[in-house]
Image (tube, rainbow, N blue to C red; front, side):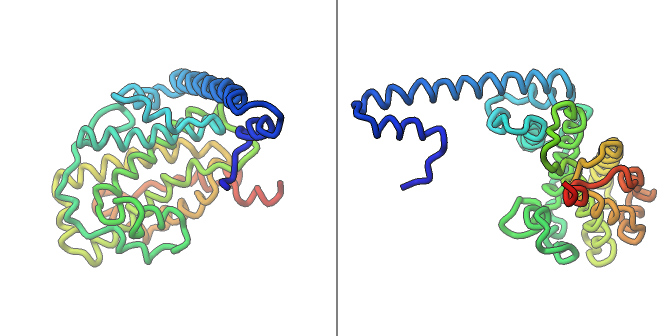
Length: 289
């Protein structure tokens, strides 16, 4: 027998009573209808909160032709995380639909498909901890398309920029009885892009030459600058990540960003505020709870 959820239990209790099965089904249907009504109401309130608190996140929702796709991410357990995730996933959908990266400011940045011919990002996976969930999801075979295609690694960088931007705006909805990792995703993807560019300069001459062409260079510059700005804007929020300090320390190590510095014509920004003692990660402080 399947493991039955708690919402099925009233039907089992009724089944044990001396009543007909038709009555049992009738008793279950109003409960299920009530649950659906509650979920619909919760989702409507969540979208209203998104509209009220995050104009840029709401603009992503509004841009979707099929808004039901956004609502599938709203389960009403952690509205802040669910809304920022909905924004993240919707950015992927809109990017594919428009064949352009949708930026936080609402503008579109054309996807240069020639970068799909660059070396596959999975080749940098060995530079990171194999047990890291972001490495497994984005750099390992069997995960996202970003493991094979730099164009999709940049897609993830952009989606996580939107994700964190929305989470920052939605702080009034944050639950304080659990750990959060809002800062981790963007910080992790930034380390991957930084390492990819550095590896290209040092060992992948064809990709390095391609990155220096006008359109690929402009795309990397634009998405990287957007990511820097978004990450830095989160630094005043304590316990907004779990492994964020580790990733950010990597970003701040000059030797890791040499290739990116050469491509950008400037040193990558180090968000030192995010490494301040008062901006602690969630994991260390969790040990004291």
